[in-house]
Amino acid sequence: MITRLLQRIDKSTWLASILKWVRVNLPARRGLVVLAAIGITVLSLIIHVLWLATGSTFLALCGFVFLHLAVIVGFIGILLAEALGRGYRE
Image (tube, rainbow, N blue to C red; front, side, top):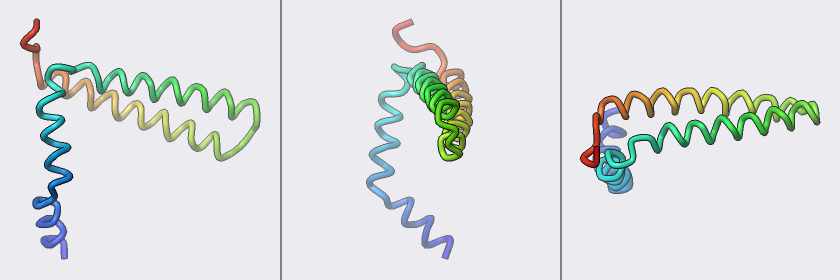
């Protein structure tokens, strides 16, 4: 069962195109992932302000989920930027 799933993932053209885009575009834009994390953090702040205004439990949950997602994306962005090293423009 798991081997069939892994074989389907290996043959996926959709996943291959995403990985190709990342491989080609990310080295020139190393800070893009960190900027995305900052944007998610700002979105989380807005959701938390709305939560304080309304008292909705759903907004509280969404705010904390976005905050944790931003931290994870930020860490991944920092690790990728360090692994990619200095760009060809620098």
